[in-house]
Amino acid sequence: MARTWLTFSALSAVLLAVYYQVSFKAILSANGVWREIEPVGNVNCKKVEALKACEKIVLHHPSGLLYLACSTPIGRRQWLPALEVLEEDKFSFDDYIATYDPATGTVTRLTFQDFPSTQGYASHGMDVVPSASDPRELYVYAINHRKPVQGPAKQIGADSVVEIFTTTVGGKTLKHIKTVADPVINTPNDIVGSSDGRSFYFTNDHGVKVGFTRILEFLGLARTSVGYCHVDDGCKISIAGLQGSNGIARSQNGTIYVGNSKFGQISVLEEQSEHSLVLTDLIALDRLVDNLSIDEDGILWAAGISSSLRWFSAYNDFEKIAPSSALRVSKNVGDKAYFGEKLKVEKVFEDDGTQASAITSVAYDARRNILFLSGVFGSHLTVCEAP
Image (cartoon, rainbow, N blue to C red):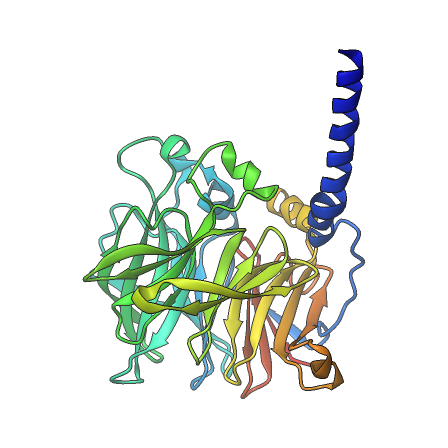
């Protein structure tokens, strides 16, 4: 019996050592435990303090207008379903969608029209898509983590849905078209919409709304997913069994990218018949990423979390700051392309948090050479002249 126990203990020790080397060490590294912050691209920047706690930003390339899904910092500390923060007695009805015009510095808080506000609008992911029939008309797809009506939020989670609005370029109102509710829209985080205002892909950032098993996903349990919905045909899971699904972006050729906020990767997905998705590649990164965007030149951008420990520390104490970074992923045309390195990952921006703290979204204006950075509980929008 003693020999059996010693053998079991030795085997367990070996397995734990292997897990540390193969998995847990990689987790710590991606979370920035040993990372030294290397400031870059953070000199020619300004802060727009009127725009706080904007989790997602989307650039309308032709006009240069930035669209933002915003809240208040204290509101994020009381209601943020992605982190299982569900203080429903403190649920705020102050969330909104805004525009920012960098040419004039004008901030416009858009007014909801025909929007049922009983359960409120709790902002998170968003997409802004020009209409295929009239480019002056825009469809706005917005994740809404509504306050539930049939039970305590801490037990059942948020009543998350997708809201579809229309507006015009530079318009000041958002006309509500449709609320899309479905069990498949379980823990939605981010979204990419279609140009007809009727369908979209979205990420579920956890396998369940609430519960202890969400912690296991941090250790590698792959339960996140990407779903697809059509307002006439309903919703379905397009691909399941992913890790840490967070931000989502779609390229001009239809390729879909999904950021991994747990293990520092970007999944490359290709659309199949009936709107299923197939994983075709993984882009390895050295850090966790949140939201993604694609600029007018087709280059992929990612909001990088330089230190997750300092990110959470800043979330719990607004007097603190957390380092942030912006990554650019482009086709490799240099010598390394001949040796199998198809993509080039560059750190275009990194800051200790002084200019841009704990960002969750980044967008680049290729026409005007402007980099925008914003965070889910941030005190401001950061606008930089890109290097």
